[in-house]
Length: 122
Length: 175
Image (cartoon, rainbow over all chains, first blue to last red; front, side, top):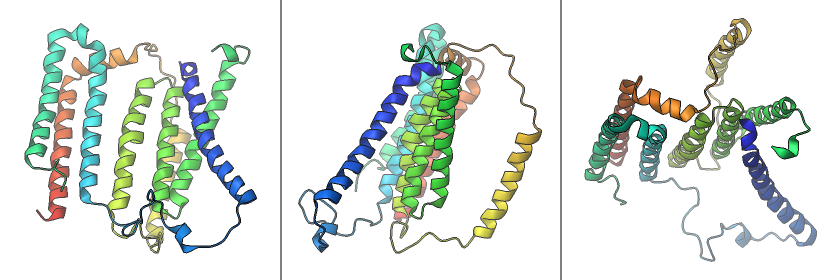
């Protein structure tokens, strides 16, 4: 029933509203109370008090992409696991074997990735 | 839902649908019109989330959960990484270019004509099938009995994607 998701909708609206209100308040306060004076230091990305090293928009390493792809694959595996987990007791040993095969194939893939050293961070 | 007992449910749902659909359209337009491709990717995430809302309105909670889990959670991360990985895309001096606008226009015109024809001429009958209350249980049973072969093939498909990703990523590194 869509009505059951009303709390999620309210939560979503509050979350978005909180973010927007924070930005709006910050802008309003700076508009009211801050004397604007241009300074180069103000435009530096904030790095917890450290001076930033190199440009912020540099290219990311391809390793991040690999991790993202692996994440999607195992995310999809979870999606398949979920309906199985609901009917697990009903299907008994047959369901266990079927899901075992499913996971085995992906597990072999995981071992391959591991052996290949793709999980190591260089 | 006690606070809305006096309101007609259909009207409320209609209103929520209009909100969600409007959000989808606004986000989708933002994806194609924003000048910074990174901002486009962020707008795409908003679009994905709104589509999840649409699935909830259609009473398909599992599909909505999958939409959030895979599209909002994983595909958007992949797209953001792809944007950040691409050389010079993140460079502010490199504006979005439209050299292939004529090709885009042509393909859009074809797609729009096709979709328009479907919307206009296709019959839209209501399904006579009974509404399934416990969708996930039904889905799980069908997966592991009637559709067990596609189910197992899906794992092979995932395995192939896994291997493909490794091979491509390793080649790029030149190792």
